[in-house]
Image (cartoon, rainbow, N blue to C red; front, side, top):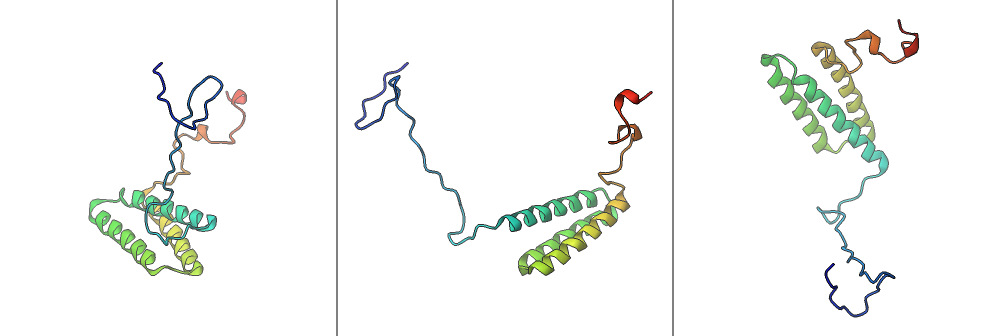
Length: 132
């Protein structure tokens, strides 16, 4: 072990070691007057981002002539709503409409998460020791 340089007014532990220096970290990098969102706003934003990603994922599975148009439409709608700064009612209506569009797109592409390829692996199909 290397010798520790002598520093004045340093608390030393019982074993003679010097504690590490603590570094103050900047919590928010960005705008100075930016407000921290509430938990409800944070959760709503995460739901919207999840919905947006799911729509893009489903649209990418479409055939070529419709794929680029659908992706562009999804991006443009989300950007217009984001730039408008909607009220809570408008945001909830847009989110509900997005869920409807997502279910429609999932039915077109056949990519629902709830669909299982193997019926024997579904949850609640009896106990494993009772299977024959």
